[in-house]
Amino acid sequence: MSSLPLVFDAPSRGMPPRHLADLSVPERAEAVVELGEKPFRAKQLSHHYFSRLTVDPADMTDIPAGSREKLAGALLPPLLTEVRALSCDSGATRKTLWRAHDGTMLESVLMRYPDRATLCLSSQAGCGMACPFCATGQAGLDRNMSTAEIVDQVRSAAAVMRDGALPGPEGTPRPGRLSNIVFMGMGEPLANYRRVVDAVRRITEPAPQGLGISQRSVTVSTVGLAPAIRRLAGERMQVRLALSLHAPDDELRNELVPVNNRWPLAEVLDAARYYLECTGRRVSIEYALIRDMNDQPWRADLLAATLREHLGHLVHVNVIPLNPTPGSKWDASPKPAQREFVRRVNEGGVTCTVRDTRGQEIAAACGQLAGEQSG
Ligand code: SAH
Image (cartoon, rainbow, N blue to C red):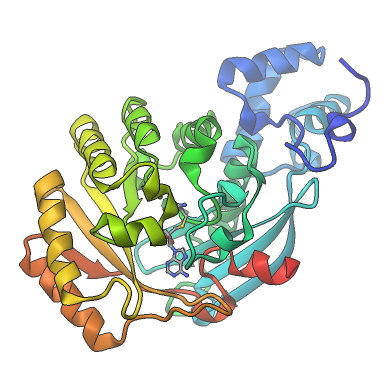
């Protein structure tokens, strides 16, 4: 191994150096031994990172000073630097723009509610799926996030909640707990499959192996990469699957979600059914409502019928009023059209609600802040 810190060996626009959160528990012990330290130091290091949520060697007083610097230097390289943080909703929503070691920009959004706190995180910088209404989709794929870059977004948010740095909706800052994770920031999680699945394990393993968040409180959202959905079903995890459908017919979905040309509706919904059968978990359907595009009453009826046919009752539709991206020709549906759409889907036997839209004024729609920064 080179004696230079790995960070200097990394290509200028590539994956970050190896990090503790990339490693399984046995791999952590091996890495520590490679550095000439006793294996139990791996557990101490994990305790600091996953339980105490710290990366500052000065806090690690149970490790001798010399070893501390060496271990932290090799296994806790800085991954994400905060560039900007924007708050809204009286402080209960906070969006953070991060710079990775190679200058790559990514973002995550932390939302506090009376009964929970949800982090919306990024699995890729940019996205290759090219959905035309999505800011990230327009910019293209920059690179995959590493497992540790995904996990570190969660660690930071968990620390913010623990320290009471994010006020609740009632405005009073008080300590809380990060309870939910949604892979609905930048990127297509199932296009970065291995790293995302490893990250989910690290996020959900009990501390100090992982961050101790319940698998049932983690949602993986996908454009519908059918083979990857089936593979995820085989991981024996209890994570919720959200499928970004946005249209109940192939003709329109081919346009709104271009990957539909590769895996059309029937195939995607069969894969979702398989996921449901393997996990027993209700599937969420995401439907961004776009004026005069996908909000017609007949499409609401078709959506309900199609979902009933493929998924029975174990499905829920989240309608998201389109958050228009700058320069887009599309707009959100008017309120009456939205109400009628929701009513018809429910009447068709599929539960349907409108997702609350946090963070509109801080450009929190997928990829908008990173887009502003680079544009
Ligand atoms: N690539 C994944 C996850 C990231 S996007 C996926 O597509 O599911 C998370 C959700 O936000 C998706 O349902 C996506 O279609 C939706 N979305 C993206 N841009 C949006 C916008 N401008 N308005 C409303 N929803 C949007």
